[in-house]
Image (cartoon, rainbow, N blue to C red; front, side):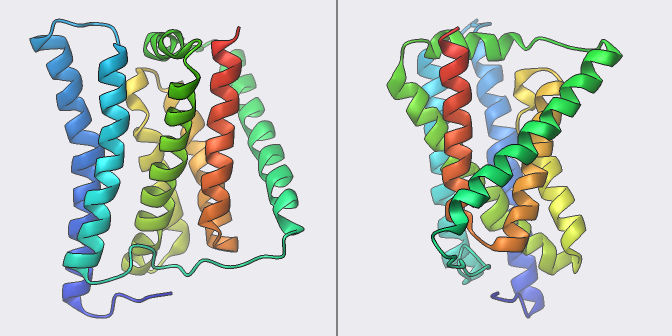
Amino acid sequence: MTQLTSKSDKYRSLGGMALVLVLLFVFPEVLRSYNRVVLGETEVSLPMFLISRLFYWLCLIVLWRYAVKIEGKPFLLYEERKHPIWKYPLFLIGTYVVLFLGLLIIGLIVFLLKTKEESTIFKQIVDLLRGNYFMIFFTSLTAGVVEEFIFRGYLQPRLEILLKNKWIAILIASVLFGLLHYGYGTWINMLGPFFIGLVFAIFYDKFRSLKFLIFFHFLWDFVILMIQTNR
């Protein structure tokens, strides 16, 4: 793993993480406020939703340039590991089972506490994507590529080096990943992604296969959106 040896290296990485927070948490809220206040739109529109997906790709490009030009480090500090081809189906099945059981338990707890909330934003997005297979594919691809590169590929290794504790780094990266979904308007829509981010972060720490996580994340979102939009 590429190290951050000097103080200037660490300060630049802190600047990169601050850049992530601004790009992914401040600018989207500005966009939502503009949509509500200036345009007077209370519902998600397809053009605005598409712009938000394109904005995530822009964030990844900006962050990548920052890592290379300002930090002077590879975007990915962890070297990608190669695994025997037969392991990937096991990764796929194992990760799916862990997520399914974990989310099932979370759903059961929410049901028992009678605190289930419905996200009107998510419902609007599902309605927008209904029958639009290109946008379903593009939305899933954006989530898989951009979110994995930023949260697992960029943030997690740098947090581990700076904090000198991989478990705190995993927890912080997962919390931020959950908070990324706060725009859906309910805490349940952040709790599920937090758990998913935690599983992905632990997997990345152990197996160092970002390619697999990108594929799995894309597939997970794609299947969920296909199910939701075809109800």
